Amino acid sequence: MQKSLEMIKEFVQTVRGFRGWHDPAQVETLIMDMGINGEKPHELPGELVAYMGGVRSWVMPNQTAPYLSWLDSQGPFSSYLEIGTRYGGTFMLTCEALRSRNLMLEAVGCDVICRPVELGLYMDDNGFPYHHGSSSSEDFGRIVSGRRWGVCLVDGSHRYEDVMRDYRMVEPHCDVIVLHDISSDACPGVVRAWGELKGEGHGRFHEFTSQYFSDRSYMGIGVIDKRGFAVGEKSSRVLV
Ligand SMILES: C[S@@+](CC[C@H](N)C(=O)[O-])C[C@H]1O[C@@H](n2cnc3c(N)ncnc32)[C@H](O)[C@@H]1O
Image (cartoon, rainbow, N blue to C red; front, top):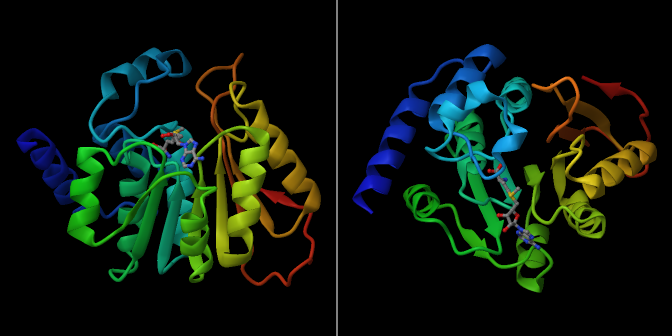
């Protein structure tokens, strides 16, 4: 517990002193320094192995850095929802990026796993609730529909049906919806869902899909920005 507390204190201190959210190169270094998840090490290039640990964001730094800089350029946002928080690294980093433009940020995380200690310390300190349970539960549906959300990351179950269900649930209540793993060889369900949503074209689409390998594709971030779009209005352009 003491070690977790020290780690979160150091994380918060470092990230709150960070002034480079506008610059993907600086954000990439920050993500690596704060620590990435090593659960599927074969998806990461050798040079990133040294950065496994810390807050354990389950991301590719070269995708998440330009995405967080894009969010920074689009803010301020007043709220953030993350479906599938795992160890909480991405939740904490995203909250801090958004918080740098809005100190009143409200955020909720959801996962079927018990709340990890580090994420719990961070959430309690900021008054951010954790929904322990499935995103498909009625309780969580009420949380989603209970307000308007600025940004929502859909990164829970990666089965096609579940991704579409999560997306359809948040869509009416959220300005910017983000899908993780849109270009991952390991997540065909998300790739299919993203392709179909792009076909529907309801919003402005952005993709952050840089890869470390030339012969494999992992993760990938897709953003659907619905701000300023009337229900049913279409845009087929994908902006990078
Ligand atoms: C890839 S991990 C999320 C990684 C995290 N967003 C990050 O970037 O560090 C997917 C998470 O979704 C959770 N999950 C799976 N099905 C879920 C569901 N139906 N509702 C909520 N969470 C779910 C898993 O327990 C897992 O922790």
